[in-house]
Length: 320
Image 1 (cartoon, rainbow, N blue to C red):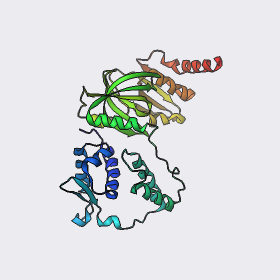
Image 2 (cartoon, one colour):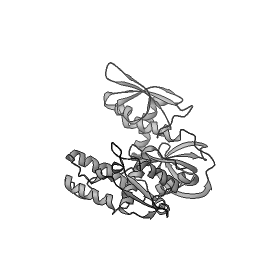
Image 3 (cartoon, helix red, strand yellow):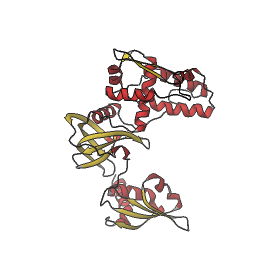
Image 4 (cartoon, helix red, strand yellow):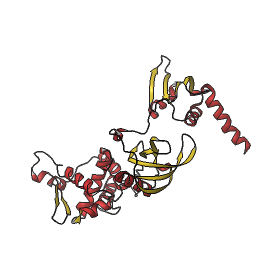
């Protein structure tokens, strides 16, 4: 069973439909292979497309998906697609920006109907050059993304070489990918990690290499795996309470907070779960005098952690 979120599925459908419209008559199996899908998943997506339309939802107001006896698929767009859109410049730019992200969906034709339409729209709104609006979700390699999606869809395992930013360490891990998703401008994979013997979230652009193991996943995901986000609080995870100057309020927006209190002088008291000590060190160094450690549960020497980390960094520069 393909493990994708509603957002992932919507992006996939929005990429598949224009390609089928421009390339009618291909077999379902061929279209599924092009986009890295199982036939059952593609057919389920097409069933949803068939119900898309406008009131009163008469046949001429619905998208018509046709699959003949030989499994060849075609899509006939409803009449309202032939009506010219009247967009403001802002709406046109927003449409251009959001549509560019669809071109990164595996299987999308970079020179197809969608790409040509975006080029025309770019000319109308006055955006010059193909790179003027550049939507990127991290720097993840396409082949690694494709292999992760395939492993998640087929419930197989892979071996990855991974750099952990929080711990500043490289490890070899055998994992069973469950879901590949985008969040906060980066690609992530939610997986069962046999090395850690637990669920983990890996940032895809930090996967340095990937090798398919060609064996079934040994651990099945739970029913709530599609709701999992990037940050996961685990039992026994240390906590730190910081008093932040007003200029450091960005911490609340950037990291999940266990507790936030506004003080009368404009400062904030924030409690954070700490995934790894090196992560907290980097945060404290970046905050400098804008943060004060008030208390820490399970972190020894937390009140001088940032100072010690800054001293180590300075000594490295001095030694060079």
